[in-house]
Amino acid sequence: MSRVEHQCDVLIIGSGSAGMTLALKLDKQHQIMMLCKDEPQEGSSYYAQGGVAAVLDEYDSVESHIEDTLIAGAGLCHREVVEFTVSRSAGIIDWLVDLGVKFDTRTGEHGVEEFHLTREGGHSHRRVIHAADATGRQIVECLSDRLAQHDNVSVMPRYVAVDLITRDKIGLPGEDCIGAYALNLSTGEVELFRADHVVLATGGASKVYLYTSNPDTASGDGIAMAWRAGCRVGNLEFNQFHPTCLYHPDARSFLISEALRGEGARLVLPDGRRFMFDFDERGELAPRDIVARAIDHEMKRLGCECVYLDITHKGQAFIESHFPNIHARCLALGIDMTREPIPIVPAAHYTCGGIVTDTSGRTDLPRLYAVGEASFTGLHGANRMASNSLLECMVFAESAAQDINRQREMNATPVRMTTRIPSWDDSLVTNSDEDVIISHNWDELRRFMWDYVGIVRTDKRLQRARRRVQLLQQEVTEYYSNYRISSDLLELRNLIQVADLMIQCAIHRKESRGLHYTLDYPLPSANATDTVLTPPSYG
Image 1: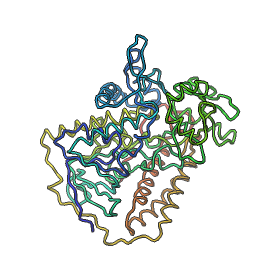
Image 2: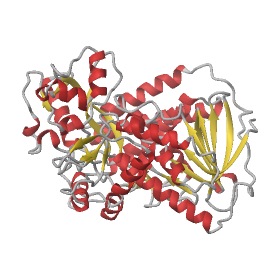
Image 3: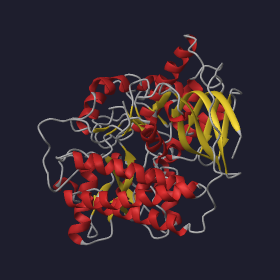
Image 4: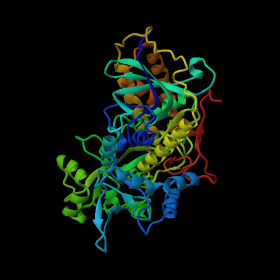
């Protein structure tokens, strides 16, 4: 039995742009602990290439950005949430610039230095501010540097959250979240974290699929923990597949930024023919769901392993200055994108649904917040518009921090020191000698999710996936109950839980809309409604 305990005012689980923004926006009187699953900065935010969508140009408008987001969301965006987010976009960029983020600039027509803005799919204007093709890295490194200057924040790498602690789960009245258990990967011990407020900034769940652009940390941990604790989840059937990930046998999935298409890159078949205008009048700048389905259709029609993205017509100097990291990565693999097209395939990229929250990041449970990709705010609807994700992370992190700060000002009663919380007890479990079960189940899960709950779905495929995920749940529950936990087991447990929730949401939606396309119901229904699931024990 581990008796290591920690206490803080705010426990942030996750260290991407959402988690770090929240920590920086909290009052310095708060004692903050931030759990990093891997090393600090490792996560989807760091690998975001494109940029941040924001209204910064005199020819653009908040109304236009709102309308573009609503169109991309295929009738499911919550207008008031879209307005809330977009209206704060310029303020977030100002804050990042003040922190020291170096966005790309250009010399304007009157010789004045101005931000270089690019255009991506679904946008009617150039409004994506970026730092070459490594915007996420620039933002995350800057936030991390600033965070290091705050002595009220303890950044704790190599901790994997196990489960949230709520009062009702330990036999006390109320549903307040009062902490979490987390596995210290350095010691193998599960430690107790007491907190007045807990924030889930754990990212999405694209690792549930066989092919993904996301790093290994994207295993849906926050969504699964929140569901087990009693929170509703919504719209998890909408999994965005990025249309253009590098296809190469010696490379793990590497994202080829949508900014290439924004700057004129063309999608072509193996014979060099463009095809996107056969599917949508916007061509390569159609929303991601349309582009991904078009590529999937052509690959299946031709039986080819990939299609190609061609930007050679823009010239070597342009390509090397605008996309230095993508150019270098491709060149290292023997692909000179200045002279030949890039082989690409779609890959799971973004989880549009998640834990139900309000605009302050509050979940169904008092003192528990969720921000970033782990949350379902209503911003993205049935399809996230390009470069709205980093914006969402920072806007809602700021809003959640403001709410937590207000509660401190109201002298809300602390709970972490007044409640007896049991230590983690592993005295009745043993070390496993069959870890092959974890790797086998992991592989099976990701393959049937790709085959049955992928870009194109059917009722038969979804029911087949549901039966298989239920069998895996039984096996992993038994394994979890009898053996000491590991990082791989925790991730598998969470991914299986989130996969089941994704499948349930997909089965509930009897239409095709946005990222959810089913051959059994190929048209959208007249009424657009969210899919919200409620835990059996909730309320």
